[in-house]
Length: 555
Image (cartoon, rainbow, N blue to C red):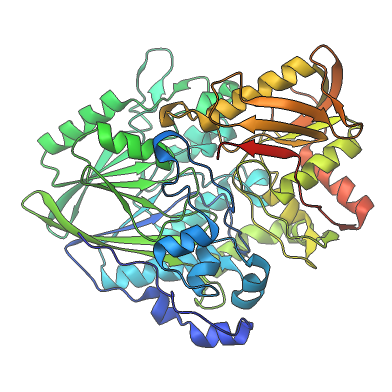
């Protein structure tokens, strides 16, 4: 089997935008040597980003156990060396965090679903029966998505005409709203692991486990895998009718079932996360392709586990993956793959999709575009322990809620801003929008704060991927600590310090803690986007200093 890597590994000496546009063309981005008889198109983790954005990849992505030092846990210069990516190239900008500000000013924004539409239409022109699959986290993450309860994304994705999708954050709209949307979808809503919680039986009425497609003379089965840890990572009370889990045994049963019904190619549309997908590929036999989502990884080549290729297609509308398969006599004989970066200045937007996007945004345009302040710092999210957006949110919580310590969830979604950029209301909502955004203020003992940190740390650094149930580490403001990621649960976090006094955190003492996105029902407080907006208005121009409050050992 052979894979074709992301185009654009030749270096560019001039980062001026005009030079970037002249050096990189839409035809080059879309060039693909058609292969085999089946084409898959994969998008995932769009998080309601309709428009072009900046999006900085993580500079820190720590792997543990058998995944230590393995992709996607390779970043920066090590990543570029691994894949032969030249410094300053389009691939550098798309896939790596280094020199982000300079490269962003040169190559411009990424994403925009009207540009994604152009790419999808181009692939379909080349291979009309290509299967377009959406990996979920689609109806969540923006001002318009929140105010329309996901309808803006439903309308736009219907215009893109996917063949199937699976789910995660969608369920935080509440199960009634999810049911209402799914019943009207013109494509399949798949989830072999979405079960009725009361009866522990598959929820087949809304979420069939798989769907068959006849493509290129091949019978293709697509099996859906929703996010397994929904009731842990998100509020169970929003979707009490459903249970999830990885459900390897049922996945194996579904693979065997579709094979018995004549499937010559089995594709899993997954929202497990990459390391979980790697483990699943080693345990479940008979899967040809896993289209991976949830952990937002963008890899220029698939990873092969037990003859299963695992494809990671990034997030926030920044990439589209094309995978061509050669299926003969019921077997995958080879594949060709390309991770296509959506450079917004290079790809011509699809006019119909632009009009559809503008229609969704029009009623809210004044609110979206209102300038709240400016930034002197690059604002980004991602990294296992902190991002500057989260540092700013923690600053706002401490200031606006008069707290000693702030906690912000380690979510991965949210675009970036460059120094000198205006901060609009839309920008704030892009990193805070959710259906349980109340900013709580409560007293916690030092001992309880440590329990929270230890619990979240085990969700990330448990050496068994099947026990990695969260996003990144909870972000903290006003608190410093040391963490040894290789210690067992309960022993990772030490040397907790209250930053404003330099004193050690006393296990028995109470501290005022402000945070948001609690999974507990009935949480009270102002909405986090209002807290952040108020803070930024008072600051005028925000500067986020480097955060060195967490000392990481064992990485």
